[in-house]
Image 1 (tube, rainbow, N blue to C red):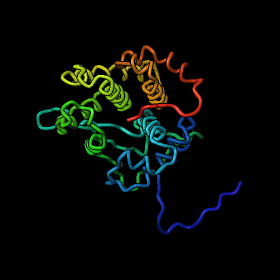
Image 2 (image 1 turned 135 degrees about the vertical axis):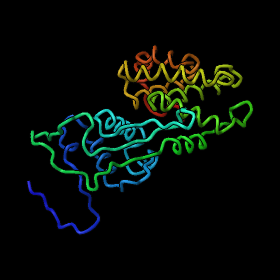
Image 3 (image 1 turned 90 degrees about the horizontal axis):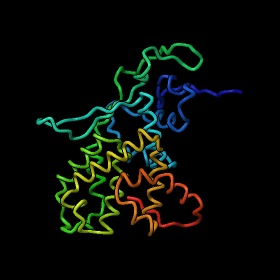
Image 4 (image 1 turned 180 degrees about the vertical axis):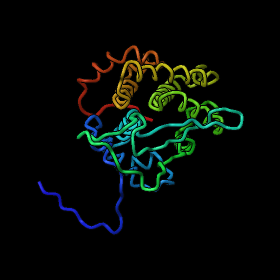
Length: 263
């Protein structure tokens, strides 16, 4: 094999080989990591921006992002206001995994490269991202039709920093489904915060303890909520967790266009 290299005078990046030579990290996660590391250290990174840079789609990129978090290349810090309440989180991207005290390449040689300027890539994005997502969500199903945006944003961010973001997204899908079926239901109106937290908690356990793949779980839930029978039966995070295997089996034979629901 021959590798043709060129002299680099502009438009190039320098980064450690550690992540790329780790055989336990997927090619997709390595590609996402490489792209992030080409950005300026003060770049404001949005997941929505990442989704637009790769053709694999949102679920695939979110899964790769989660993999990098698990491997110690991305770390999430919680942000609090003056009263100590959680209002969001800040991501830090590391050139060397935080989980390895003495990082080595797959060939056994120690890593000697240092970050270009010694600073990690930081992203203070969740507050703005969740605000954007919420503003893009159709709230016409709400009985009042004018839910206070500030309160809704804070509650959604609280769920996002307390539980796995994928669990929060799944919980929101079930909330939207329940509102379509029964707009006046108490658990998705007056008790919405309690309901959302409880469902996100069950779904977070499903991802962490049951080891369910978030991308697959979203497809399964989307299928279930698009099915006239199962939408009536999946009315909570716990119910989805309990019926996950049954739903996956039922979904498998489905061919052609479906009524999958997504938010």
